[in-house]
Each structure stands twice: as structure tokens, then as C-alpha cells.
Image (cartoon, rainbow, N blue to C red; front, side):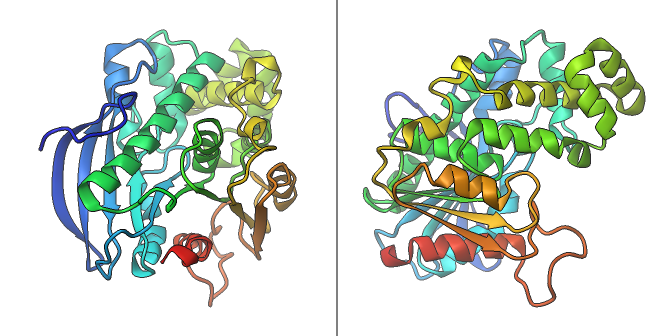
Length: 343
């Protein structure tokens, strides 16, 4: 299959495409490449530039349907977005799922947390700094534009005026960036994440020990103690643990904000925004608390925030009420409500 027509700034190669069934619905699974100078290392950049996409058209086959891109959080493959995508497709909207850098097939080094990928990046001599974050944000924004083009060109979904960006956790922040800086999409929808870069970074650092498995004392000390903390982390979890610690250190720098982040924080583009935005918060989420999401959302003139009781950063084991939908289904139902007038 040849490359499709996409914006000139984001040439997209379709390496493969195959028809699949996802819980009874027809879909197309793509392997894509959109070259971007993430790190300057040829092998790493190839890994980051090659990613999967899954397009699920509306279940009823309607023509000219709305399109929603779905972008998950750090380390999460696009499969985590499938329950939400199915809710959208069954409700009459098309869904386009893609991997994000450090997630899915774009996670060099493997492993279940960003530490392994970050360790591989550091091993190659790539600086873990704000410019690297900026290049990743740039790349994701262009990938999302290319995803919309793919949906329109190959599947006839997402006519102008009927395109929405949906992101969960860090995917919410990245989608907010593309929405605000590049004007991509007509609506922004987020879950368990918020569009403020410093706030999202601080929330991730605050709960980093819980998700990385590194004791809180090492995470906290690692932001100050440098090599000593890295030695302790290496003894406990090898190079992935060191990578996780370095990632926390980078997040801490992002959380402090400052002029280095000018143009990277989505909230910097929010005040004059006329397009609607909507966020789903977890009542017990320590990463993106309802209060933090409401504060960030208040920067947008047309914003709404819905809080899901008992939800943390996703459902924690044993916390999901017996009659509650899965987190993915809840996200899909929430997203569908935001685009119901398009279906």
C-alpha cells in the first residue's frame, strides 16, 4: 500500500495495512512511519517514528462520520483505548487509535514502565532535557494530524468541523498541545489528565513511587542526590530503575515550569480558545486531581469537567463498583456524549 496524501509537513508512510475484527466490528490495523528527528540517533528515531494505528469506522457504516483520535498515556499501547473506541464506533463515530512515544511499539528497550526506554535513550548518549520533550511534543502533534488525514483519506471519517482529540493521562496533555498550539481538531476531550504541563508533571512525580516500584525515599532523594540515588536505584531494579529515576527528574524540571517551557504548555494557548473542551476526572486520582483539572480547565472559556466517583488513575484493584463500567468504557461513553450532536 502506498503512502497516502497527508499534510506536507507530516509525510506518512503506510508500511502495512490489514483488515481485522475487533469484538465483531470491522477495523484496519496499520503500521505507519512518519520520520521525525526525536533524538538524533538513527535507530532510536526509527523506533519512535514507526508506530501502529487502528481505525474503527462507525458500526452502522454511515458515511461522513465524525472522527475521534485516541491517545493513551506513557507506556500504554493503543490496545488500552479499544474499549473507549468501541463505545464511539457503536455510537456512530469513527475512532483512530495511535501509539505515543514511550508507549506500545514505540517504546525502545521494552519493559512495563518508561524506565527501560529512558535507560536506552540515556545509554545512547541522548540528553534527557526539555528540548527532547519539545521534539516529542512536536512529533505527536504531527502524528495526530497525520492520523486525521489517514481517517479522512482511507476511511471517509472526520470531515472538517467534526474532528475531536481524545487523550487519557499523558495522552491528554499531548492532545491538548496539538489542539492548542496547532489548532488541530474541533473539540478536545481528556480523561485522568489535564492540559497544564507543570501541573501534570507535578502530579506524575508525586505518585511516581507508586507506579515505578521505586521507594518514595529514593524517588524524592533522586531529584536532589544525583549519582547516589541512581546507585541505589540500580541495586534495586537495574538500569530500568535508573531510567525511571531519570524520567522522574525530567518531570520534576517540567513541573517547575519557567521560560524553558514557553510554547510547550498547552494552557499558554487556552485563553482565546473558542472551541469546546471537556475533561473526565477521577474522584481519587492522585496524578490529576479533580481540583487540578478544574483549575486547568478554567483557563478555557468553553470547558466542562465531570468527576467519576471512586475512580483513581483508572480503576484500582478492588475499587471499581460492581455496577460500574470498565474505565475504557466509561471514557468511551464520556467521549461519545461530547460528540453526540455529530452522530
